[in-house]
Length: 613
Image (cartoon, rainbow, N blue to C red; front, side, top):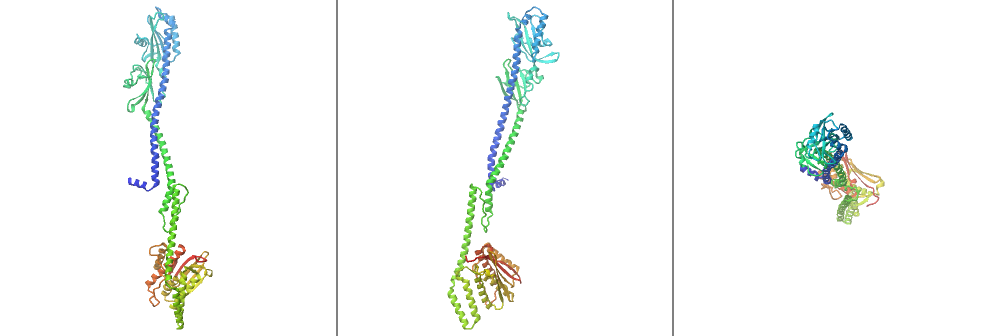
């Protein structure tokens, strides 16, 4: 599997670049997402703490207002003249009592958080109270505060006409303003329900926070859970009260696992009470999960966008390379290199330009090689022609011709004269091209010689467009075809036959056709010759056969061996076919068709040239 993955990467530059660039972008994105998540989680926790601390500060301000108001009211009442005079009496005065109680009732009614104002005289009984409470509860609180200057009681329950009420009482002594003699006690009770309205539903920790008022000794003075009032904090949160450090405000972590909470605290300097708020740590986890989800979504979106951009850019960069690679992998040795479209000026564009220059250079080299091979063959032909001394040959044949005439051997004289003309046109003073009319004259001389050798065995018909007779063509193209038609078509037939030479003029080319009504060829032999011609066109090994003129091998009786004849036929056709390809290009090769017993047709076409190249 690992090998497959590596192989998948190794076979594509686009994949390599995509993986490397995407990895170099995705890893920082993941690291940034993790960093953002951690910072956001910490900021969320700190924000919750800050919000809770601010709310505790506001709650403490409201609590301080109540406490200070109760303190101020107590100072006013213990110094009030009518109360001083009433408590200084030796006995109770019902009228004065009523007036004082009425005044205290008005004061208590003006403050929603004051549950009761009561005065307990030292000299006579009963207490002056604004609430219909049973005296024993308040009296117990007064007795507990005896011997102190001023004190706040813990929370306790009282029974009134509405039912049970939880109160916290400020108790302070009343002394004479004249001689500082102790006259009694003042008790101002605050309603715990009215006090706790400020922190009953704290708006921090997404509403899951809880705030309680804890006394200086760790007793719960106010709480949303009324069943906890008056109890010690220790059973409910072991060790928490001891862990809260000294100081005005702060926060600590308390608990483990699912019971872990953040504890926010703020002390009230007047009483040393503490407002203690708790936020379940699970709320942080929920917020963190939400932040994690958002962060993961943002990172995933960023990764997707980055990967898409990387893929787009890498594909845009590597696509020209892929096109160039396809061009190089599909090179056909027989065709020029396909041109690479250059539309950019960067390194890839310059590489494409270099590729195009290389293709043009290779094409030039190939053409030079082709021209070199053609020149080599022509040089070989000229060397062969140069080996024959034309003047010596012509003089010798002329002498034979006159000797034959003197001996009255007309057939020998005609054959020698035809052979002389045939060789003269074949050599053509070393030139490669000749007019079509000269090529036809060359054929007539050949037919003249062959007619003497094989009398009354064949006839030749010439169908020539006069417009092409002065046009130039490569010499010695028709003679091998006529010879093949005679030797391999007419003679095996066993009866006289006809060879037709058809030359037609086209708009830009000249079409040559040599037909015979001879024996034809079986399909297998036709396929062999066609494959040989295709091999010559494809430049396959063994298709390069030199020489122009077919060398006929005769047994001396004007007859040929079938095997030798077959080989010579293919040799001559391949020779003409190769010369056409070398001089006129791939569109000028031989086209051969034959039917056993129905004759053979060989055709080719060449460009229409007004003069020799």
